[in-house]
Image (cartoon, rainbow over all chains, first blue to last red; front, side, top):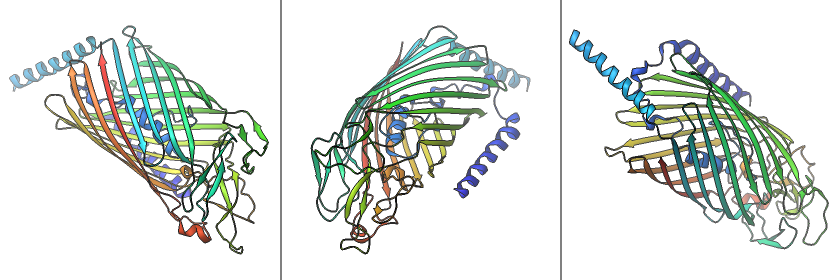
Amino acid sequence: MNNSKWHVLLILIILLTFIISGCTSLGVNVWERDILASPHMKLEKNAIEREMDDHIYFSKEGSSGGRGFGGGGCGCN
Amino acid sequence: MQLNKQLSIKSALAIATTVLLGAQIAKATDVESTLLIYSEKDRVSAGEGAVSIKHELNETQNIKIKLTFDALTGASPNGAAPASSVQTFTRPSGNGSYDIQPGIIPLDDTFKDSRFAVSGTYTRKLSRLNNFFIGANFSGEHDYTSLGVNTGFSRDFNNRNRTISVSVSFTSDKVNPEGGVPIPYDTLALIGESTSRLGPNATKKVYDLLLGVTQTINRNTLFRANYSRSHSTGYLNDPYKFFSVVENSSSANPGEPLTYLYENRPDARNKNSIYTQCRKFLNGNVIDLSYRFFWDDWGINSHTINLFYLFDFKNNTTLEPHIRWYHQSAADFYIPVQIDGSSNQQFTTADYRLSTFSAVTLGLQYSIPMQATHTLKLSFEYYRQFGDSSPPGLIGSLLRYDMFPTLNAVMFRVGYNFSF
C-alpha cells in the first residue's frame, strides 16, 4: 500500500504540474475548434455503451468509478 | 504576404461561422439505444437493453432520461473451494440443494435475476460559462433496490479551453436476499435446518464526490483528469457468498472441507480513483487512451488502461478496435479457504472478485451512417479474466485444483442512434 501511495503521489504531482504550469500556453482560439467540434472528438463518445461496460466491470471486478460515479445501484457486487 | 493574411482571416472566419452555425442547427432530441447479449462460458448469460433520450428544452436547458432493463441467468461462484468428493450446498432460499462434482470450483446455479433502472438528469446553462445539473436514479431487482440523487456544477475558463467540474451523489440501497440476511461467520445451514438471520433486509449508503478538469491541449487534442472518492457504509457483504473451512495439515484429509461459513466484510469502504483520458485526432482517425488508478481502504489497488482507435472512412463509416487491460491486488481480508484450528480473522471473504487477478478485453465496433442523423452500431467484445490458480494459503488436496479457473465472456451489441 505504501508503494501504491507513492504511485498516486507521483501521478498527482505530474497532473498538478501539467495543470498549473503548462496550461497558460495550452488551448486554441475559437476559430481553431473545427476538429474539436467533430462528434468523433467527444470525450463521452459512445456514452451508453461505456456505461454498459462499466456496469459489467462493476459486477466482475473489485474496482469501480473513475470516469463517472462508481457507487452502488445494483446488487451484483 | 498580404494576400496570404487575408486568406487566412477569410478561412478562419469561414470555420468560425461553420462552428457557430453548427451550434445553431443542433437537433432538439437525441436518442441512443443499445441491445447487449453477454455470455460467459459455463456461467452467467445476460441480456440488456437501454435507451437514452436527451431533449433540448431551449438554448439553455435540457433533460435526459435513460431506461435500462436486464435479465440474467446462470451460475456464479459461491466462494467455497473445490473438494475431492461431491459437495452439497443448500440453495440461498433454504429450499433444495445443488451438488458440485469433485475438483471443481463450486458454482451456485440458482442465479437468476432481472433489473429495471431509470435515471433522469436536468442540465441548465446558468450563464455563458457556468453549467449545472441535477439528477435522480432508481434501480430495482427482486432482491435489491437502489435510489440515488446527484448534482454537479461546471465552469469554463481560459477562453473555454478548460472546464472544471465538481459533482456529488448520494445513493441509498436496500438488499432483501432470498432466505434473509445471513449472520456473518454463521454456518451454512443444511436443508430444512432452521437458522437465525440478521433480518429480512439490510441497507447500504454510498456518498460519491467527483472532481474533474477537461483541458484543450491544441487543435487536435483533448485531455481530461478526474479524481473520485466514494464512501460506502452499511451492509457491504454479498449475502450469497461464503467460504470453506478445511481440515488442517495434521488431520487425515488436509484441505478437505469441514464446514462453510458466511463471509464477513467491513461495514465501511472508502474508494478513490484518479482517471486520466487523452483523445487525439490523427490524420482523420482518432485515438483515445485512458488510465485509471484505483485504491481503497480494503487493500485493493488496481490499474486500468483503455485504448480505442477510431478509423474514420470516407463515407463516415467507422471501425473502432479497442483493448482494455486491468489488474487488481487482493483485499487484505481475502483468503481462498480458512484452515481449521485457526481463529476467524476480523473480516473474511473468499469472493474471487476481491482476489488478485488480471483481465483483458478486446473489442471491435463497426458504425454505419443510415441517414443524415441515424447511425447503426455493431460491436463485439471478448473479456478474459485470469488469476492465480494456486494462491498462497492452500494445503493438502487443494494444491491439486485450479482455484481460479479462467473466465471467458463474449459480448455482442447492436446500437441505433438518431436525432430529430
